[in-house]
Amino acid sequence: MTHIKHAFEQKIVEIPVEHIIPGAALPKGALATPKFKTILGSIAELGVIEPLAVFRSTQRPGDYDLLDGRLRLEALKQLSRPTAPCMVSSDDESFTFNRHVNRLSAVQEHRMIRATLTKGASEKRIAEVLSMDVRSIRDRARLLDGVAPEAATLLKDRQAAPKVFRVLKKMKPFRQIEAAEMMVAANKFSAPYAEMILVTTRPEALVDGAKKKKEEILPEDLARMETEMERLRQDCQAVEDEIGDTMLTLVVAKSFMTRLLRNDAVHAHLKRHHGDALSSLISTMEAIAADNRVSERE
Image 1 (cartoon, rainbow, N blue to C red):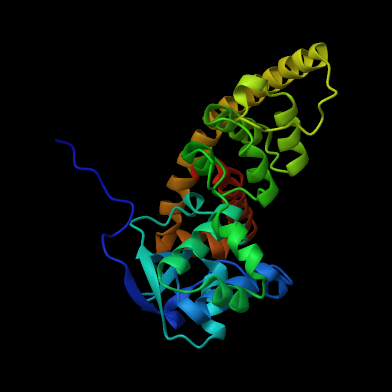
Image 2: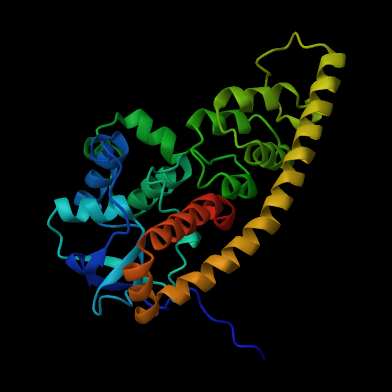
């Protein structure tokens, strides 16, 4: 039987914060955002719920390169926590992780709150820690009640507004999945786009008692919108398939170059004699990782 290599080591380990090295600086103003304050308050009160992802550094023995969890790491530093719970990756291919988006998605926020409630914290206490009202905490805790698990999975890493999920709940599960797939294909996760999908949904695909926002839509308009949306979905899928093949080639090339640059002699030679080319190569590799981050997280 073929041996399958695990992406991570089997145990979560505590690693000294000072030995975890982030790959890039935080965007300007990131620490002043409500999301960071939410993470900071949550960790201060309840600890780290989702471990950081790291890779053993090949350049600095004893250190770890951070693959995912930039804001969590910064929160731990501000709280003077000595260690962080980490999953240790067996590879440092950074395109596997989203290193460029540090905001919690609505689904991630929901799961964080649910996990906190499971640990015994009250809604009132969570609201105090996160500087929210109890009603908002309650709404976020119930965000996925009535949402098909497949649709929730499709949107788990997307910056979809909570209202999007309220719109999805007006549809039956199979239509929720279709709606989530259309949002992903079009890369649109706004409430108006979800409402547009709801408007084009036939009555038999709605839950009992659900009402559309625009009841005045004519049957011929509905048919035309459905046709246009299906054509858009097919076009997006065709482009996605073509991009997938191209990205696969680029990722393979990036993986080879990453391993080549791990050779100290090669890296030193390029840095000494071809510094501009080395900088350009590294920038290109980072761009490939950034462009591929969404598809690799599916």
